[in-house]
Length: 50
Image: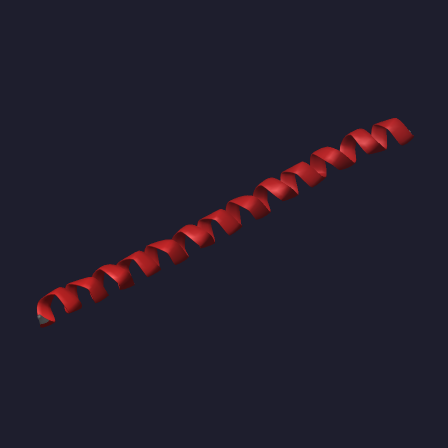
């Protein structure tokens, strides 16, 4: 009975680490894309006001 529990814990820990890595990538990409969007939004605004 101990082996399935150990296996389940190992799978859970691996999935948890993979999920945390995925969240880190998503946060990094969303920060990069939002920075690109902001710079793109500012440029047309400057052109219109100028």
